[in-house]
Image 1 (cartoon, rainbow, N blue to C red):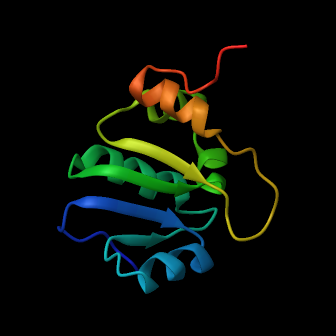
Image 2 (image 1 turned 180 degrees about the horizontal axis):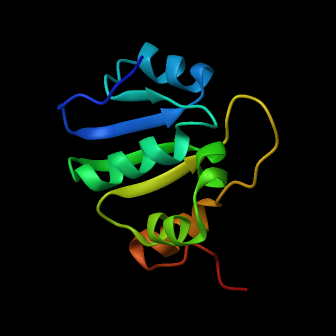
Image 3 (image 1 turned 120 degrees about the vertical axis):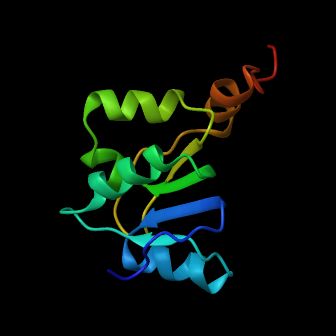
Length: 112
């Protein structure tokens, strides 16, 4: 399979061909191309391996996960999971404030 995860640690990206290609072009080696058939399986494999500190996954991967997998991913700090919008389509994106609150436990919102 193109883009299998290799042992380099750090960050891994799971996404559609366009997203995967973009991250490869900036030099990231651990990139897994996903589709509707393998997205949830590849995500779970990466989560179970425990070798990565950051998992960047397409929002389309998030949609393929069960509720339990989604809740585990969103609560996880090791690895930290960030869902990003795919190159095409409309998706809900976690705000910077929500991400900081989830990861750091602090709110970036300015008091009124």
